[in-house]
Image (cartoon, rainbow, N blue to C red; front, side, top):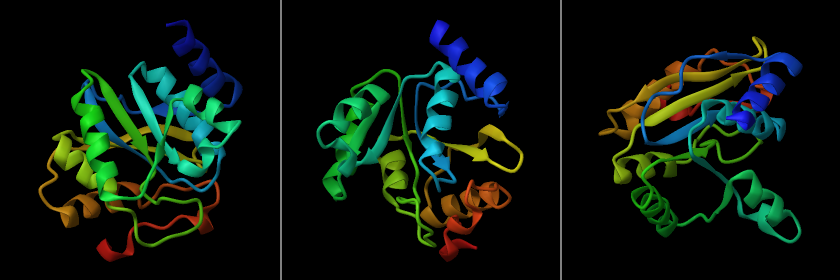
Length: 185
């Protein structure tokens, strides 16, 4: 409880961010955190998630898990991402084996601009039968929070159209490096 309060003070009072929307009262989810154009996004995201009080793990690039940085990232709550179909099953098993856990990731998959988001988050949500929580940070408004929840994930196209709708007006730290998935505009 004290860490939650400290995180909220740092995020809102010291850094000046406004928290918008309530994190849903659910035990498990895939959490999209976007836009992701700066390493600062991870700091703000960590502080925000600490204010929610939920159990979470970040998915981070496997390259971050080399000595000595791996110790920091493990303490940070990160687990390395491996790009293969087995990895999706590993995350589904991790969700299945925990009563409460939210997996946080940035589906852009990189800091550089991309117009094709990675699909792994979708398959993780579908296979684990959990909703997708859309969290965001808007640097122009200095807001961070929840944009919406996608409970119905039967169609990747429909899911991505909803995501594009919710994120269309969000301003990244480096706006020129953020793009929605152009396949679904």
